Image (cartoon, rainbow, N blue to C red; front, side, top):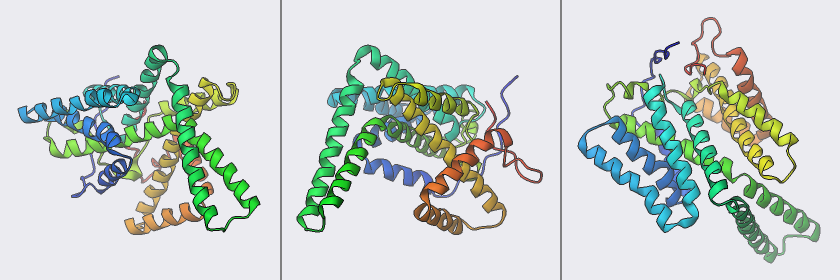
Length: 329
């Protein structure tokens, strides 16, 4: 069966506020993250979409970013490889897929991280253990400094301090174990913002540019169905693998990433029906922000259940509604 024709794209907003917010978040994480997750893919995507000489030259300069990072910051080499492989998968998707948006880029980034991890297990097997220990140690030290500053004010009794120390230790362990999920989120959101800006700057009438779908409304977000199998396999491996082992930690991170994506898909379903009822963007934002602040766990669990149910039920393709924007895979 041939590729499905691209669906009509929503008119891109005059100001890409969503991508601007994502870029601001990457900048807050530090310049190496912003360079690797946004500047590098932006330059290459722009050169790929707009084949004029000046943009090809800009793409060549952008391709130098991972090389410089690998040379100047040796500890970043795994992340450099993951970013390069994820971008290569993204370019392949632009060449062969009928549409490429945030849902398709999520699979590209997952493939890049998985391939980079496989290579690094062969090249430097102790890297992941050392990185986890380093992250846990640094996060624990920061937490203890924070506790010490609070204790200096004399506002902590002994029992409260013990509870806070346990919470800091648990948070440090979780942060050390879940760094791959955070890396996935940074590369995914950064590459999505990069492709959005590149598509706005490049020629919109090209055959490749017509496949770009990153400017669609949040309410149309729908993951390729392959993600549900990734989620189920990851959850199964997490439950069955020995606790604390490499397989257990890898499964945890894949499950966290997939759960976060399906929770966002559930929120997209709710946004879709709120839009159909005429609720304005400000009202939708206040509604979800209030829900996440007051009842974060019930809101996220409900969103995750909606996202997973959408795999089979196509909750946005009821009679009188629009079909999902993302084709099944």
